[in-house]
Image (cartoon, rainbow, N blue to C red; front, side, top):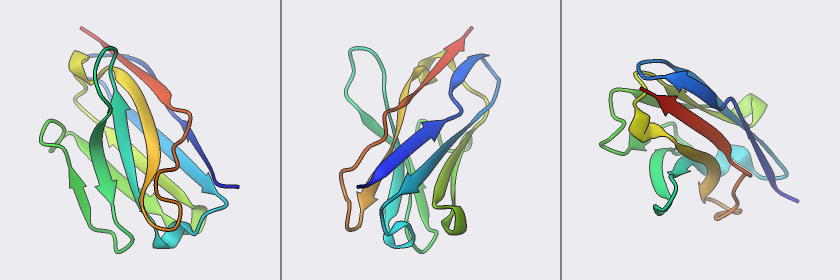
Length: 116
C-alpha cells in the first residue's frame, strides 16, 4: 500500500521560512515525479512545484524564487523549502505522485499558516 506522509507545516510570520517534508512508502519513488500542491479555503487545489525523476523541476509563477523543491531518492523523500512566505501562501500543502506507477496518490496534508 502506497503511503505519503507530510510534515513540517506550522505558523510563521510573513517573511519567514518553513521546510516541508514528505516521505513515501510502498511506491517506486525513484521512478516517480513528485509534486507539492496546496489548497486554500474556498479555492481549488493548485500545483506549487514538481520534481521529475531526472531531477528537473518546475513551479508555479507565484512561488518562483521563493520556494525550492528537492528530493532524496535514498530516503524516498521530497522536500519543499519555502522562504519569504506571504499570507497568501496560507493553505494545506499536499505531497502527491504526479507521474509514475502510483500517479494520483496523495498524503494527508500539512497546514501552513502565514500571518502578517
